Length: 144
Image (cartoon, rainbow, N blue to C red; front, side, top):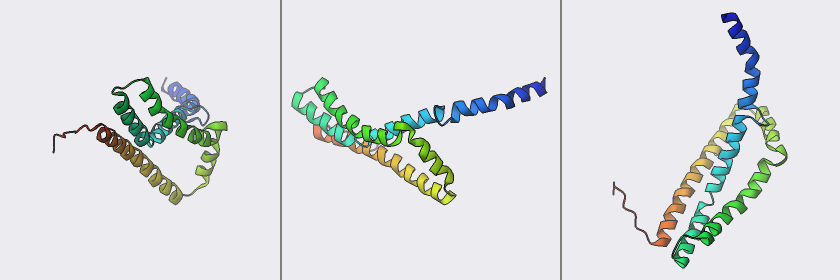
């Protein structure tokens, strides 16, 4: 029974690998696609939050016009990035390049990716701060 279990596990491993790590439709590609969109869009929070705050000041309320004007920069800036990476499966070419490079090159891109994510988080926080500053809302933090 143990032998059959390990035989079945060995036979199903390629299918599991394809499900999780498949380059065309694997779980990790879907997750990377989602995370790329999320972090890239966050960079434009400063612009979108500013537009939203100005719209709220002008219209004295959050309405459909403000929401649409806030989303337009996010959509317009995301489209070129999406086309550069995911249209016509261009990311498969990037996989080939990544597999060829040495460890030093990978570490350099790990650092760049980390800085990209930290920059996105800082952009989000700056956007929120600018949003509240334009609206004139004072925030009290418990530690201050």
